[in-house]
Length: 250
Image (cartoon, rainbow, N blue to C red; front, side):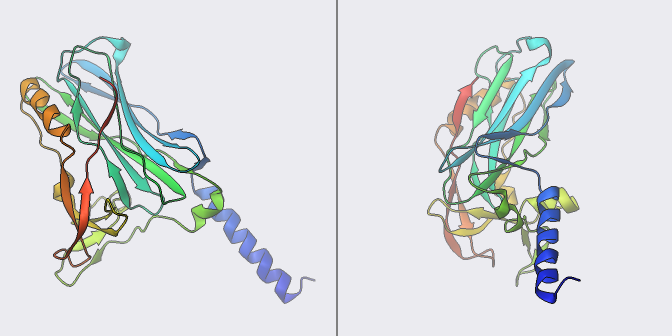
């Protein structure tokens, strides 16, 4: 018969094992979500998100390729990449970048982020439909850990939608995956490492009407724009969040 102390240890191990089984993860390297097929203006596209890590940092990437690798005109496809800590806080985001010349591929990455043991990535893809643009979120990548998947049990994203004193909802972007509702204030890491919140509307990229406007937006992306990071009250500014874009291919 098990003694009480052994039963307690066994129970803890069993619970931890269940957590590990149900948390998708990969160790140092990369992990990609599956490609999703889209159609816009009779053209086929595939997009996905990938999270990368090395021994000290993580970064995100969104890549697109066309069906049959057929070239599309400049400004017909755009991509942005977002990197999240394993606890669901947004820590890096690129701006939206459009293909600047006729191409069959587009790949955009975030800047590198340190200070967390694990990261996952979500991409945003947009395609010209002949009269405007269709916007999509990619499937989230699995979480990539710099060290041990043990930390997966310690950094499960918060899935509850809460309200602050000003009746504004707040939480991680992960909430939207669980509930279908994006909080008004999304947890994010400021450039100095301070954890706070950004308004979800500030994370929305301008939608062009045509490829000419899309290409003009590329110039704005190059300026690495910033938005305020707030305390949970939604009014006290505690830092800034910067959109930094690494172009892999366009």
